[in-house]
Length: 142
Image 1 (cartoon, rainbow, N blue to C red):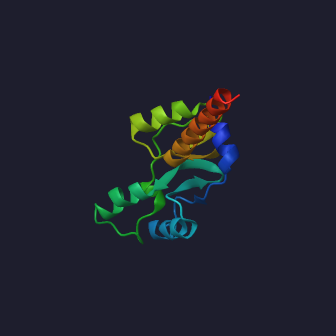
Image 2: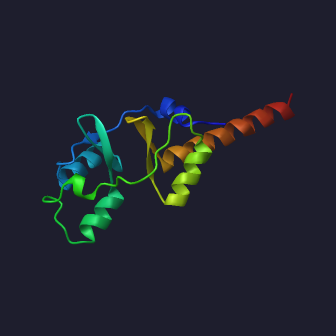
C-alpha cells in the first residue's frame, strides 16, 4: 500500500512559501512563474495555511476585492486536516474527496514536510495500477 512518503520521495518536498503580509497579486505572480496552483503561508518557519487559486477566485474576485490591497493572510485556507508521511494514499484520497480539497499539508508535529495535491494522489494511484498490471502480465506469461 502506497504512503504519503512515497509521493514525497518521488516529487520532493519543496514548497513555495510566502509571508501572510504578501499581497495576493505578488503571490499570484509567484504561482504563475512557478506554474503552481498554491503557495504555503508561513511566518518564522511556522506553517499558517495555504493560499490557492480557489481562495483567490472565491475570496477576492467574487467579493470584488483588490488583489493589490488584499494580503495572502486574509484569504488563505487554514482550517483543514493534515496528513503525515505514514498515511496511505487511499486515506488522502478519501480525506480530499470528503472535504473537497485539492491540497493537503503533510505535517510532522508542527513542522511542514510538504504538500500533497489531488494530482499527486491520482498520479500515485495510476502508478500503483500500472505496477499491478505489469506484475500480473509477468505472472501470466511466466
